[in-house]
Length: 209
Image (cartoon, rainbow, N blue to C red; front, side, top):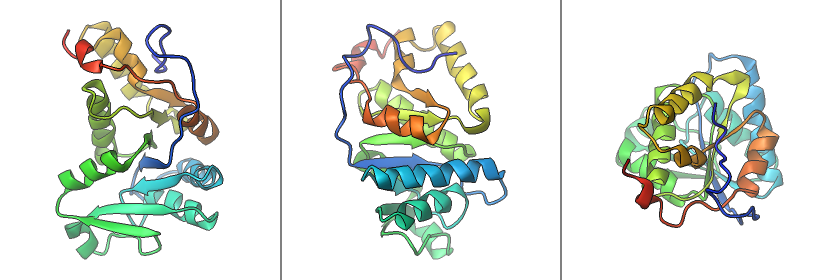
């Protein structure tokens, strides 16, 4: 299984001066407590490291947990939410700032464009879509920041195995495994974005196989 790092692909480690970290995560309130525990811990660590959080602005689930944790410790959390969701009452009113978009597509684009790094927590179809899209953006040179998969409870193991198979069967290049990295704990996730390695200067030269 690939962990996202390959020697000879990236430059030497450096401290990345990050300001905004986008969190992809579940809006479900029916999931196991272990996922909420990691979301809260991640929120506290974002605030401790003076990193502004960006999320989908949801009022429940891991989105609410990580947002409340950031704000609880004096940090800033911005929610980006489509108007139809906001009008349904699905927005979190306790966020530091709420940005309303006209569509889901605009929401995802704005979340990615304002972020210096991405951390993906466990989630359903929406989270998986966001994660795979940002991996594709980095593959194409549209996004260049760190992408960290927080693999709480080994939730992402099947996806990581699928990505590994894609590389093994030449649907992706082997060096594209460096697009993402995997963290087992919130502490490691924060460390991986703060001490990320530079991505390729011209990733598009590897886009075609």
